Image (cartoon, rainbow, N blue to C red; front, side, top):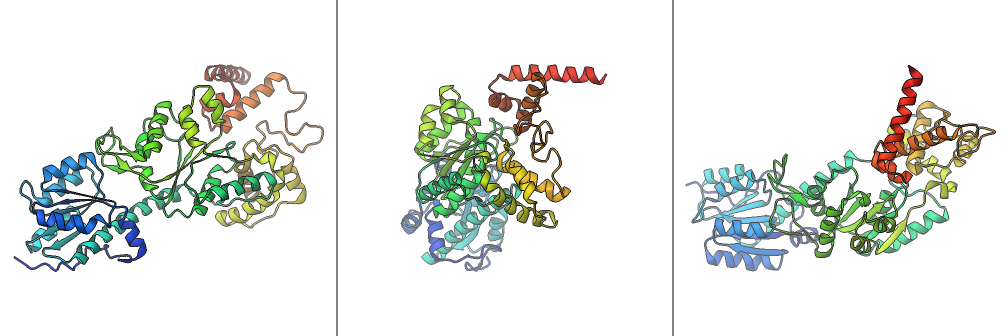
Length: 480
């Protein structure tokens, strides 16, 4: 038997401010399971943790602990390393093989160095000798909470860096955008749900981020585009899943609702969510609990929801494509982000902003646009809104001028050319050619998504595919 220094720490597990207000607040978010076959030790730990943690449960065996884990989510397990029905180290190996990532603190009366090494190699966060002081166990629990918090922040940082965009602020002083941002500022400190409506590319996510930044919420801003994730995987993305819940689920994973705890979860393009998934989301919003895919237990969540859509949800409800009860749940406060054509006076300020930010990103000189070039862009109708303007400025910085199609007109028409209707198509074009150009523009705006393009055009997907096939056949015949 070799004495083990119970004050030693696992590498990388140094406290980030033990006893601080931030550490105590993190502690209050933790659900803890105590597993010990000594009633006195269980009672002592439960009394010590009850007032400091969100929830505390106790079990006298691994079997009882597994039963509790099936019904509840736990962030931390405090486990006697030698239990009557199993070894704590063997149980930890089994938990990790199942994908359970809960932090584990082992406690023991046996000062065995080999046992301590086995425990730490199995993935234990700490190893504490009995008898121990209350301060020792509380410090260990705080460190575990801080470590789990850092891991979540690291995951979110990587996720946000992968989708980072240079323009993050709200630029513009037009009456329409100022009205929108004034309402956003008023609702930001509340916990109310917000529904943001606006065309694609208007900056709905920027408005959502502005609300989160002004809210004072200490958690992260987590965004999900509901249209970019398959309906088969969106439930796992939001709620998490257990190991083996579906093909490819190699390990347990938390959902975005948990990553957004005490923060904001932004659900972009929520109208793309299937009706069955809408029902599950409604249940979460009502009960404030999520059930990971493949799990029996429910996990409490505390994320503010901001949803966004490029459609009128009221019309989607009338068409039977969106649940009425979910719509009324979401539209506590509705914000409309105006399209760029309704705030053309903001274009010069937006251009200056994009020139400054993109020049740094691209490593080029911040070349300003001339008055005539800015005036030309102000005469365009901007179907792609602010996103299209940003791309136009980026191309200008790379090319040094505005090509004929720089303004984004799908037919390649210079909207500032004399004798042409701007915006629009040449008056000598036949109707069939105008229709084709308009349909292809809608398809490009939908990034090739035929279903989305058909909805924006007000036709069925079958009709859209029939027209495209016809035009492709005409083009092939002309080239033969």
